[in-house]
Length: 173
Image 1: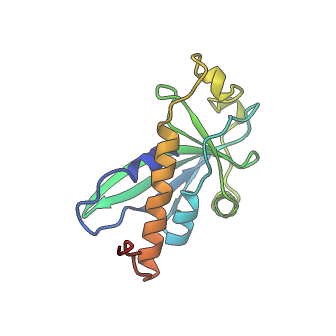
Image 2: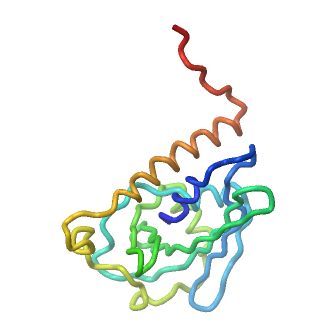
């Protein structure tokens, strides 16, 4: 999920908005493709990085496709663990990043995964260690926090433009 936040950092050379255009949600033996814009926006929502769950639980993969420009697409894969309300981004090489899903995202995941068999709990990676344990130096990378802040600002700007509200003007003085 953190990777989706980093995608918002790609500079916008044109007025084309960066937005999710499709998601492929997969379980143990089947996948579902999501193209509904409102559901896609909900699936990208998450809170700030948090500790991973204490133990593994059934889970799903989500491969999100993001439009980053005219005809350009990028992809990232994350995991959703519905019973914990957490999403996991990044990978074993970069380090897993866990974030809480928003209530809207949880509802969207419930709808999308209804009747879809999840992957078994024992195949979920990145659980049971706190952020401090995952980073032996006692800290964690600030990049997820920076990316989350920039993503929230970009999303707020996107929503303002989509609703037709004027951009704020700098104070005269």
